[in-house]
Image 1 (cartoon, rainbow, N blue to C red):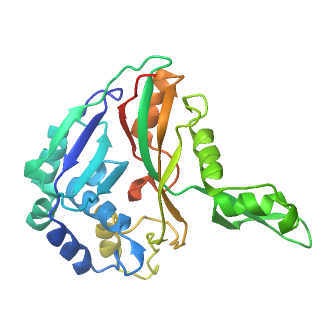
Image 2: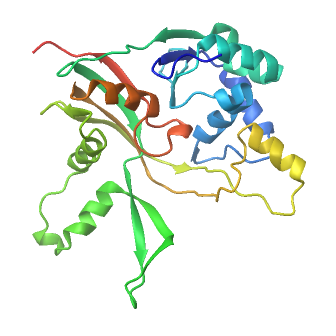
Image 3: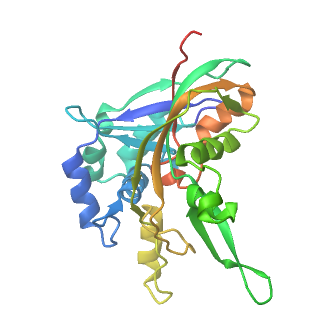
Length: 281
């Protein structure tokens, strides 16, 4: 049984990092690789534990001197997730995620217009750029690519370097996030901060050869190690943690945004909007 769609829960796992990484490394597919983000590995581990109920968006938080946290939002009652794992997860997966220690809380079902909330979100601030044939001008979407929003903004200025207006990464990412909060919430002036910026390759599912054993294909799809019909992709896009204070403008849509997440790659550890009470003015 699942809760009503309007209900949203935050769940917290205390994963066993050694067991989790050992499981990822033992899989027949290379779901973790040196130099790549581990989000695909965690996506696969959650799918192996919960199947179609796997929560997303999620975020792994590791702090020096503290136990790691795996946080996620879900519309499913947490007891349903535990029951699903007891039925379908292997003992190794069950212990790696720490399902017996799951904690949860219901998220607010109502916000009000003008409510101020501090936020933090880990995102890949990218834009989709279509390829245009230089000879014909025709757009070939099969050759489209995902690109850092900052680099795209610099190129879009289309001016000699010495004549370009000042374009900062923080300003571009602020604009990128504001667009994705459009008509749901606004970022309060002076509150935005690019708190952290890394750059790493993102490992994506790769399509298996069509001659592969159909039974093996179905099993890999079931546990999240293969997306049926999906083409593989790797890229060195930005990994940014954004912070600030927002003001809710559409309470109902804001609840939906929490459950959906922000930006792309939400199934791989990005886009989970974490909240805290807003400071008094």
